[in-house]
Amino acid sequence: MSMPTTVADGPFGNVTSLFPDGWEQAMEPPPAAGEAWDAPVDLGESRTRPLFPVDTLPGWIGGMVAAVAEETQTPADLAGCLALAVVAAAAGGKATVRIRGRWTEPVNIYTVVALDPGNRKSAVFDLMTKPLLTVEESLVEISKIRITEAETALKLAKATADKAAHRATNAEPDQREALTREAIALAQQAAAITVPCETQLIADNATQESLATLLADQGGRIAIMSPEGGIFDIIAGLYSGSANMEIFLKGHAGDMVRVNRQGRPSQHVQRPAVTMGLAIQPEVLDAIANVKGADGRGLLARYLYSVPESLVGSRTVEPEPLPDHVADNYSARLAALAMALVDRDEPAVLTLTPEANAVMLAYQKVTEARLGKGGALRSILKWASKRDGAVARLAGLLHLAEHPTDGWDRPIEAGTLAAATRLGDYFTAHALHVFDAMGADPGRDAARTLLDHLRANPMPAFTKRDLFRAVPRADFRTISDLGPALDLLEEHGWLRQQTPPPRSARGGRPPSPRYHLHPALTRYQG
Image (tube, rainbow, N blue to C red; front, side, top):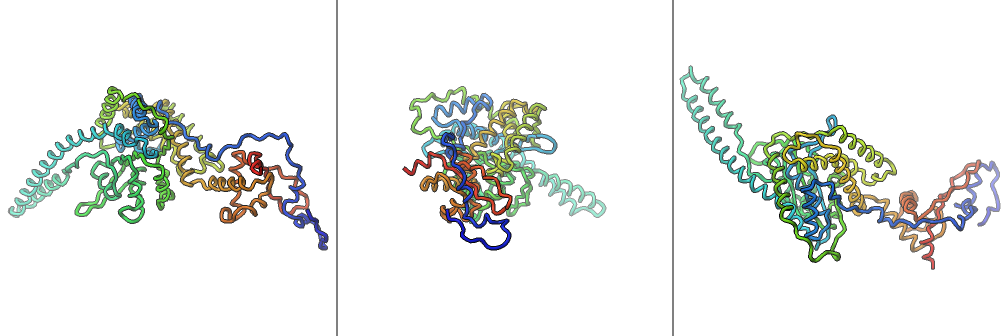
């Protein structure tokens, strides 16, 4: 290290600046030879994906999920997430969960499972959703009878009102006022008769306009169930030319929707409830992330994601078939739930027992603690901010599934809420993985880039300024850009930041942070 040969006249309170950057660290002794390093953690391993907790589901659903997973040799995650969406399709718009005060959550949910082709998604989708389609067929037959009755009543009421109007028109002056009042009253009675639409519980794909119409026609609820991801193309603007997600945002939150249809009066859907149960290919997740406004407006934060490990290559070629009694029980209970709720005009309000409320409060505290700076959920802040609400919705679904004919007459128990929190933890782990893959955690991408650079150009020790000079400027435009990547590499054990030496009383610029590289990387030098 060269030393300056001359020093300018004047006070010497800032002589540190005369020396090259990092000279203080150069005087620092190296770490002791025996100082141990733990094995570093791969940057992808921290995003472990747990298995779907089948035991959180009521027996008739859990048995179906396990049996379908066995027969199709697919991860239970696929059947499990679809089962939750199917229950939501049966109950969505017909029940809400009151947590405390004015905080309520509807029981409709958006689930999306990502698996590569060849994983028999369509087979699982058919087995899990077909019973709901059977229920829909029964409801269609009932609705046809009601449509006929309403149309007949409307025709008679209009005819009666028309006759009354004719009498009023031709009446003597002294009778005209009374007959006019009678004609108006009869016309109002006719106008109050509504002819219902044919019942539909499930749609495959729907544009924003058609979905709004379906919501208006179906009493404010509809489910989009599909073994493909075509709905995301529609959201991205397949038919409209621009991203249009308003109905999907409001349909999840339950915010009022105005429906304007040509030739018909506008309608207000006060509490829309859209449910989604999708099975897609993993690359569709990238397409979702690229939908303009999907992240900023919170669409991505509304989904419960699942990305299970594929079983292809390790499947049993002679699995146990789905037992008939398991499938029949699943169909019967699902039908009982749907039929018990279908005629409710106002949503049933589900409440929590004091013990369940305590479980919910404890979970909220955990979520809140992890949302702060440096918290485990900070990188998925928007999604995690909806986590507690999602758990409340899941608790409502589990409760109704456990008590399909009278769940609204009893509160949600602590055990049910605890099961919902386990599902919440499951979906949280998968959301972390998904948003990492989507690039929603830029610090992790930067850390991978930096780790690749250090593998190719290992340095046993370096300062932050030294590293900034060495890395490509296209990857790190400013020295501050290195900070999050260095922090993450240190957290995973690839680096160690050394304790800086005591600051001189003379002040001056603080020394650049100094790091030591894990020996596993320095060995790359040969």
